[in-house]
Length: 162
Image (cartoon, rainbow, N blue to C red; front, side, top):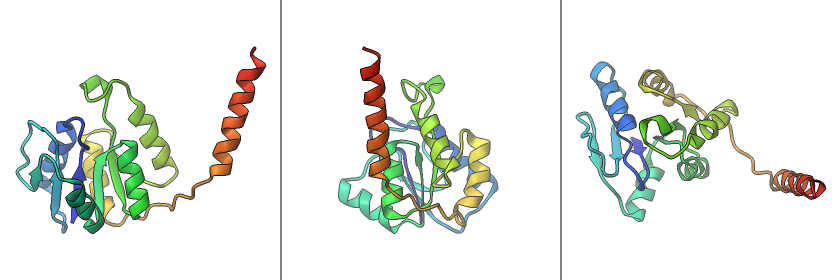
């Protein structure tokens, strides 16, 4: 089963519709179950609910073979923590999906490191969906020392400006 999640704050019709339309031309061996928020779009090819309680959401996430979602940090981190392959589509400001394009840079960076797959539009999503089943994400290794050093250097640079 592939679990499609758009988060709980805003609908993400562009992603839900792109995944649904993929099935107009292609078939995956996996069933899709989706949590789509208050979406105006109703998928034809898979079951979708507006919301799930935390227990049901966590169960679906754990049981899934792979995840499709927006490129929010919560979804990305949960995929890392659960060891799930993630295909993320960043929400975009130009479509009124977010107030800025922070998800674009975040998703592109994690894809460059081999942690996730990213699709910026429906045509990219089709190509990446066919790769999702065989995608093996690079394991992410936390490095708190490196983060602390970057923060120390940043604070030091601010102190020098005074």
